[in-house]
Image (cartoon, one colour):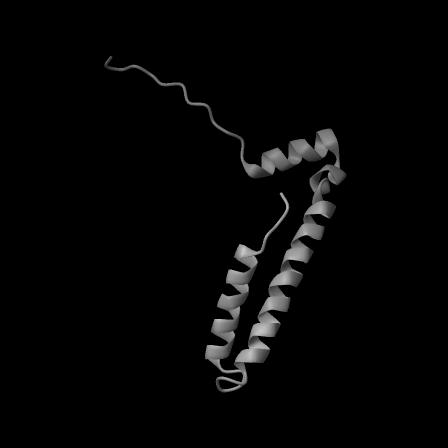
Length: 89
């Protein structure tokens, strides 16, 4: 097997892929499916920030108002709340 050559397939880069997509499908194809995705992200962020705001409001009475502790614990509570929130899938 000495001197055997290996043919490697070189994958085109991301810019080449972008160019081909733009040529074949047009610029609108890059944004197909963006609308429903943004709706889902906006809803999830709204739930997260509502939980964060409520936790922060309650924790400001227990710790120094707007301290690092309040922000860190509020973020943790909001993350836990959002993680275990029942969802329809």
